[in-house]
Image (cartoon, rainbow, N blue to C red; front, side, top):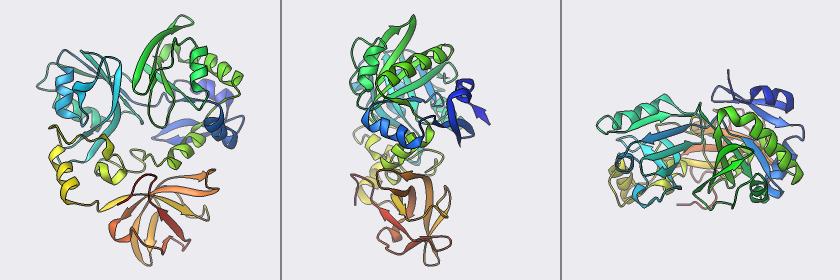
Length: 353
């Protein structure tokens, strides 16, 4: 079981631990999941996201290379700007989603939502073989902490940032002798603080004090996951893998149809002529029994889909999951789990056929 850089700190202050991607993560802290969840919506939460992958692209041709490979329009980026992007296979399937940042004309950075994977790095390096650029996994060198909630900007200013960055903007600043970058991100909202892994412990302690002064809390994996699942943001390696198309997991907003890149012809044809054979839904259950990651969903005796990540939704006051459902069952009212517990599927927020 792999551990986070702050594992020793979290052993002292975490109440429970969770597991994801073969990592041990702080599940909740002293206040408990319900209060941590409330802090994200009412005040501010501090999250340790040092598990997230960070990949740098270095070289004068980095922008040109990336524009031919990733799904987003790289030339529109200014220095310190970012955009939602993804990498597709030649068959149009998702190899990875990320926020792509332009730190300078010769330095771009992809920040993942999950740990880095060999298949993604190998794919990027394969495409880079004929380019004079370097693809570097800097996850071990650079760590991410996040501030989320309505008072996140106030905490950011208290830690020393001159101004709150806008969406998709990186602002460098100094705090307590430590050099930091603060990135404003779109979803699930808030700010990311990038710092050297060697400075992480001191930064966590300082931020925790400022967050608690603002009536906020450190937030563990369980509350963060609940917010993610309620917001219908799929997790790679848990809700889907590299066998899925962007439209099947509600990530087609990352696609640009006006330029050429790897896999673009396939997803453009799907947009014009086809419909998804499967897609992600919210799945509600009246019981936790049988509702676990990877469990199957049935319609009578027919397999209709599979449950992905699960939580107890505080917004809906009942168990909630993301589930991949086959097309013929999109409108079914008789779905159930193994054992017979009935479930209800609902289109993701803002989505429909």
